[in-house]
Length: 150
Image (cartoon, rainbow, N blue to C red; front, top):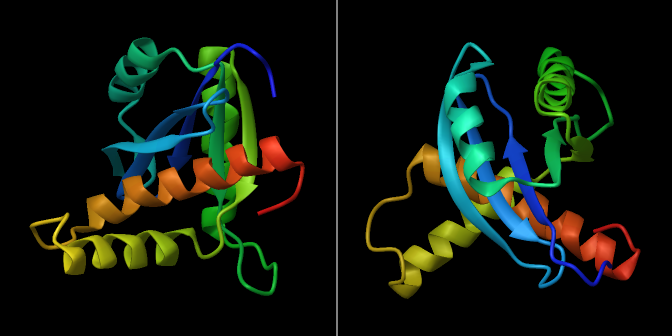
């Protein structure tokens, strides 16, 4: 790990929503940040512009959906295209990561927070999207620190 903290942003790409999380390489922490709208997979690039300008990440992590049997889907290709466009538009390194089960882990985490009383409202789909981005980023940061896959 570098001695200098680098901001890293993660994206959980979807056709209707894109979850966003931010973290840094020094502390190895990640936090859910926002859920941005998408229209049939097309993000609102102005909102992504604003988010990236505010946080100035050195790197972006994008979750790539694969089936449990490693099968690709239409969404796999669209997420890869989103990742490529992020790199092209913003000139930052983009790392693709396997996002299998990240949404399920995010949903379980949020439901547990609700049961514990730290989340005082119902879990919304947007909550799950941004928490899934946080899960992806936390796993990627852990891998960077330990050198082991999640």
